[in-house]
Image 1: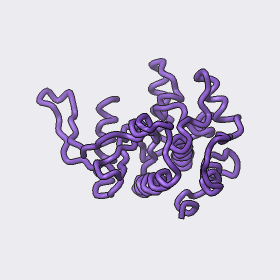
Image 2: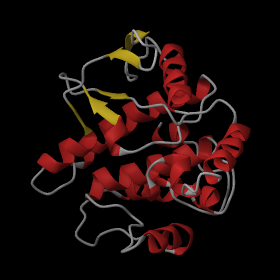
Image 3: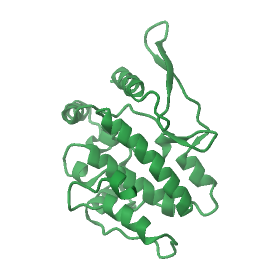
Image 4: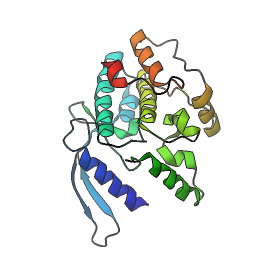
Length: 227
């Protein structure tokens, strides 16, 4: 399974080659014993989680949010246009170069075929692993339809993108609970709220609201809305 994921990541990185906001793969090779796959990747200075941890208030100014929102959206759109669903949108997978521009990375959970997810769930379930967490890697970014047993499609990546936007805008996750079950409940039931202290524009909160809506499926096209 690990080798399969590594080969999938090599495939995705190869397809995304040349895009300014995608991590570049320079080389890959097997170890002499053939048990390990090594990848030579573009250097990053930090990830978005590192950046937030260095901010005194734990979040970014709205201008910075808009900057990273646009670059990240272009990268996700490029991934989707190449036929892949990411399934692992989160702060730690958005890396920053020395010049301040971002690049997306870590595609071992990406899939070109939504039906493949079902096969993997069944295989992992036989070994007693948690089905939901395995599917996307980070629970806080799961979309309601995935939690309720649906397939993870591009619109689910947009939900996770909305969670990430909320996180860099306010320094907290919108549906985080005190337990795993509570977090899952919040994602599927809790009304989205914004911190009262937040000084952000109505356009910014509207953008996040449209990304994190449960009804009105499919979700807003972020490229059109960010426009």
